[in-house]
Length: 54
Image (cartoon, helix red, strand yellow):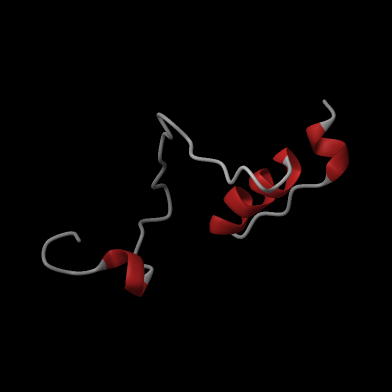
């Protein structure tokens, strides 16, 4: 909620909004790659396997 509006439901984030995960809660039944892909999906970004090897 921001100023009485549910910005998550309406997807009203300013374009330069960032977040810092202090304690990420990964899903233990998924691989590390799948957990990262789910996080990337939040911002509609694609993570390639070759990007993770560097």
